[in-house]
Length: 299
Image (tube, rainbow, N blue to C red; front, side, top):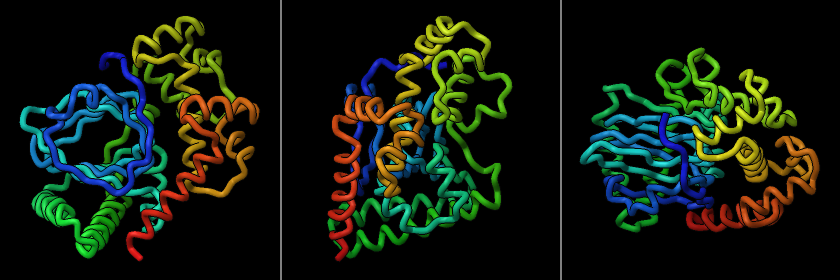
């Protein structure tokens, strides 16, 4: 299991962006940072490999793999092979939802799965396509950007078909894998239990009971494994779910709080402001304003 996290989490909504870089050349503070943003993130490794901490456990993306995940899942670069070349694209969540993917693919992404396509038959065309996207986007041409977005949408729809037809051809974060792995360490099992029951009003006692540990022992094990305590991790899951509901629905703030596992509106407001730096209403309004601004680029 990787060393505990020792950095703060960086939140944000980045909008439509792209980049091509050797991850080893990221500044050290950036590589230590745990990132959370609300865009859909696409990764394509031209050569080498990249290991993320995605959620609770490491996930490695190999060369010539087209990978996609919702970056609301905390992620941090743990390591990369020498000479790795990473292409990344951020797609605003409202655009992704507006592309009307198959429900299974869309819901898997929104529930924390990292989905990859490692079909060798696609590797050459993906490499050519990703390089073309990067080249076209560097031109700053609105027309080329529209073309790139259409091609990204089409590629993701092919991935959605592959996801439905070949369910074994996917990689998931530890949260999604945990249910079928009887050998997971207890800390992983606690993370899995939290991911599936955070909305049920559980606390440290229930999490510890699920792995047959005393609450104090469970807390020490969890902090030693993941660098954060059980209460904070549980709260993070609730906040991430609330953020998703705020961005993707028109539910009342009270309903969002209850659906996310908070026992009261005051508790929700306090926790949300502490982690996000604003109120739930302001967060929703900012996300909508951002979406309107991004959409206006194509009018």
